[in-house]
Image 1 (cartoon, rainbow, N blue to C red):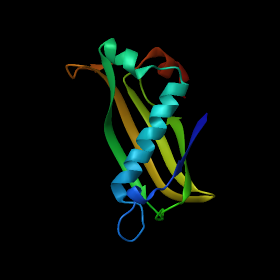
Image 2 (image 1 turned 135 degrees about the vertical axis):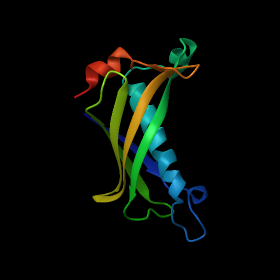
Image 3 (image 1 turned 90 degrees about the vertical axis):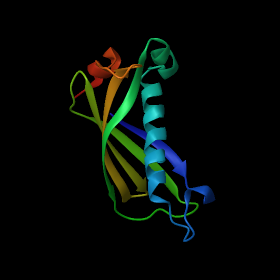
Image 4 (image 1 turned 135 degrees about the horizontal axis):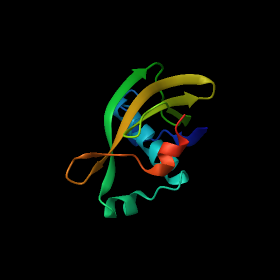
Length: 128
């Protein structure tokens, strides 16, 4: 199942040339993952109160075509095969049919003291 998250590029997202600053792509995909997790029914505030949080362990990113001020983009998020303790998601940022940015993100679940923990059951059940 693919999750879609629309984003518009604002002036604050760009550099002096009007092109999206490279680090902002990571912010865009983070927002999309947060909404995707929310739609899965996971309350991250409650999860933290129960002593667990998500953490990004690895990001492989490819910057293909620049996004520009006022572009309407869509972040596509799809789950990849993972394990009980590791979630891998593919995230693409599109402008229409054009792929601008692609990332493979590895996420873990950990306790507040930093110990790795199993992913929530709702995510494990959703894994391919």
